[in-house]
Length: 312
Image (cartoon, rainbow, N blue to C red; front, side):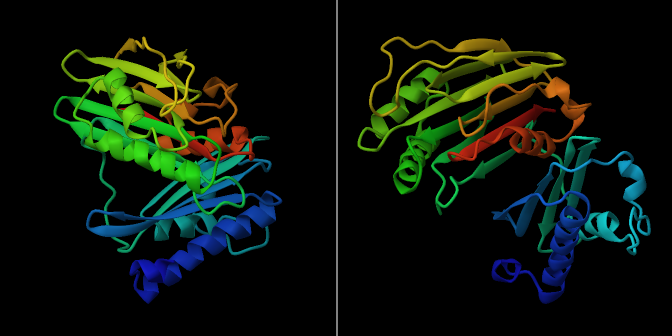
């Protein structure tokens, strides 16, 4: 895949080393685990992202094992250090008795810098097919403007090609809609996808001028906002976009503040999770938070999408 993306042979070989070290550690220390990966074209460069998840014994001292030469077994101890050195971005989170999640970004150029978001929103999303399907029936998109931004997370009914087409149509409608209020946007999407299988979706919109969130959803997309240790879940309306939606729909207005964390996910993940159970997870990057929640809560019986955003 790296070569198909245009990685030069040397960079593809470094990618091979990273994957080998990740999987070797899963086998040696965690008795197996899971790798999620995808390829992206990101502006002027290509990248591969990898999430490595396990439910092993966990790591007590992450800082110590990041050093080349340290090993808990009789190996050379180049694993974690090599992954960090060869990747453009590497993050790891672990708790004793819980396991470990790792995030790796590999760009086609080894020296490509990973810049901070300039939009005020740092986000990461994981979207995984129903087991055995080649297409995902979930989808997400974020639109930015001078006035704010809008986050869309949708789940086509069922799974497979028809669900994928339904959520794809909804994202096209979301992209071209000129409205900025989530209620108006959902109505626009509803009219646009009437010939599809239908879907459920939530839109969370931020207005910079009023410093507020407007959140509205139809169906069972779970949305929760953390402000420090406080958090609140926002309940969507019953209905199916494209088939039947309530006549009267109102959004929930929430103050928009720095350092908030928004979590939105489809019903491919269980809803009874609590970030407070994971030590200092709220301080981690969106990718680590998303992968930790996915690891603990994925059902494995449907498409699964989770989007985590941090206000910076």
